[in-house]
Structures are given as C-alpha cells and as structure tokens.
Length: 132
Image 1 (cartoon, one colour):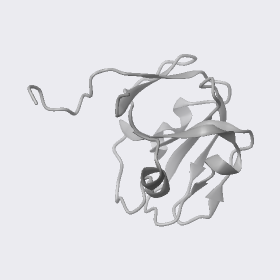
Image 2 (spheres, rainbow, N blue to C red; image 1 turned 180 degrees about the vertical axis):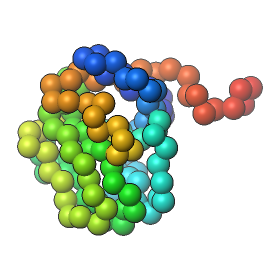
Image 3 (cartoon, rainbow, N blue to C red; image 1 turned 60 degrees about the vertical axis):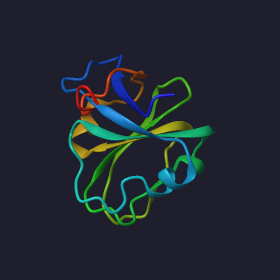
C-alpha cells in the first residue's frame, strides 16, 4: 500500500491540494506530529485504526507547538466529527466512533464538514524528485 495519499473531498471539492502520510503502526500513531515546529498547508497525517471507536481514535495535543485541524472519519470515509486541536490541551475524543483521523494544518478545518465523504487516492507524490 502507498505511503502517501492525495485527499479528495467528494462532497465539496478542495480548492487546494492536500497530501497525507499514512500512520498505521504504533510509533507513528503515538508520535503523530509531536515536536514539529510547523506543518505546510498541503500536508498532514492520516491515522488508520484496525476498527472504529471513540476512545481508540482520540488525539492528544501534548508536545504540539501549533494548532491542528482534526477530522474523524468512519469506515466509509464520512466525516463524523471535526474540531480545532489546540497545542498542549488534553485529549480530543470524537463524538461518534471513527476509524480514520486526519491531522491537518489548522487552515484546512473549513475544508471538511460533518457528513462530507472523503476518499484517499494513490497518486504520484508531488514532493518526490523527478527521476528519483
């Protein structure tokens, strides 16, 4: 499976491209974006969990130095919760069970609304050097 996906909001097309790195395993899911000083508006993380849940998909903001757009999706890719995660605040738990979580630049929060249908496409990574 690819390491990076292009995010597509099928309900309301995104005005700007968005690429996410996939976190499926323990250390990546534990660290997320902790200790980073910034995040580009075009990038983020996609957390993939083995099954849907509320507490299992909770996000902590410890050791975060900037706000994040937090988007929770169910197993179909439908947005079930969204909010702004603030640095050093405690834990954000979705209101409904989720299977996927997007951590994005805070400016991307309005790109996703409750009920939106989101897909992840395996397109060429725009940051990869040509010929590499």
